[in-house]
Length: 113
Image 1 (cartoon, rainbow, N blue to C red):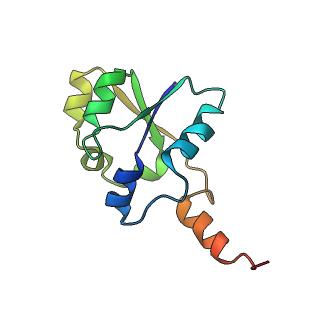
Image 2 (image 1 turned 120 degrees about the vertical axis):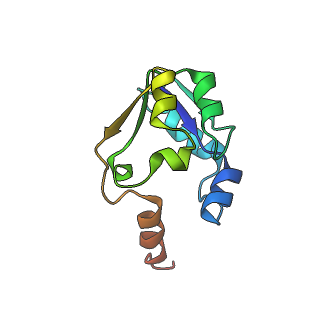
Image 3 (image 1 turned 30 degrees about the vertical axis):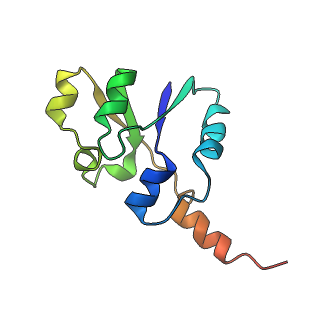
């Protein structure tokens, strides 16, 4: 499995705040997963077609929390583009309470030592 990982610059631009963990730190975590063969930077930023085309995947797999959002607009491709490139979009169950937003909230509640 190849994981395309957003750069720190893209996250800062998209969310308006830098990531808590750097690209390298997030990459190390992903590479420690036994199912991950390679981690590549999402060099296209908002235009994910660039990174996708370099990897040439059979599937794009994302969390089911995106089913109710416009993932196609977010990633700047269409269902037709996926079909033309013989790529299938798959959703995996979203895991509750591990989002960055939730982790930030929990950290803000941690007592100072």
